[in-house]
Image 1: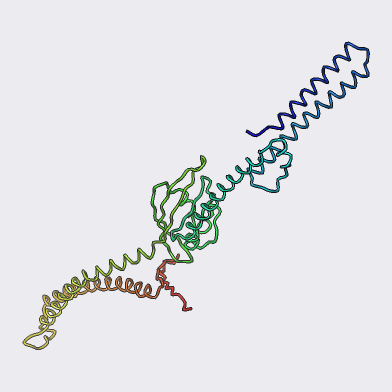
Image 2 (image 1 turned 135 degrees about the vertical axis):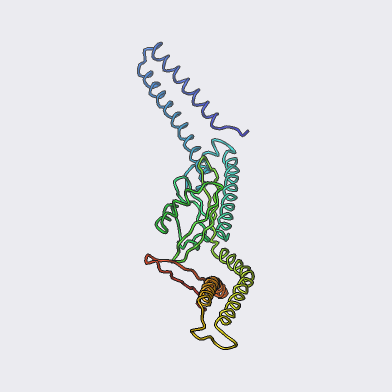
Length: 330
């Protein structure tokens, strides 16, 4: 421990005040000198006030010095020279504490910047908000997904897409949901997973968000490719009966290698022809429907090969609108 100059000064002042008190009592009671007694009384009041001022000013200097260490603020005024005279070695001890605090704060800031850099660079959209919906983290990936530069409250997404903010806020920890999001008439499929953390008695919810529209379209195309191979066989099975039925109709309306006349056509021939036509129509509808589905899948595949997108939407008039977006060449 360093010698405490403050304790020595305090001891001297207390002894001096005690001595003045004794002299005041002596001259007041034992002698007939009221003027002298009044002098020591005034001196006693002054010494006591000076002692209180000395203690208060010293405490103020210590408080300012501690505030400087706590806030790491060099603008806080304190008399370091006086503290060193009063408490020898105290400033050096506080300087070590100050350096320790500074090092801890620097390490925390480095960790914070490192975490922010990771959050900003990660490809998955991330948003973190408290129980009131106030957003604490909103990374660049999510900004690109939903098309806004910043977000202060999760409920503000209701203005961007009807009910989107409330739906995100209501996702429970550990739950995974799939939401549709309309961005400039482009329907996105958002896969959202929620988790929760607790920091200083405050619960924060973290949502990881990905646009899986392209993945779903790729799976759809792959499924169509597999179905094409399966339905090719079915198409051949559909065409074969059509060929057979056509030959049957031709045979029913032929006689000895030549066409039958109207008089030669029997009701049975007409019934057979009608039944054959119904079978042909039924088979044709199935083939046409399948070909239309393949056409949409192939069209999407061609557009994706050019780094574009194809999507359809319906309006209030129940009309279907196909939209193709292709990137412009630089």
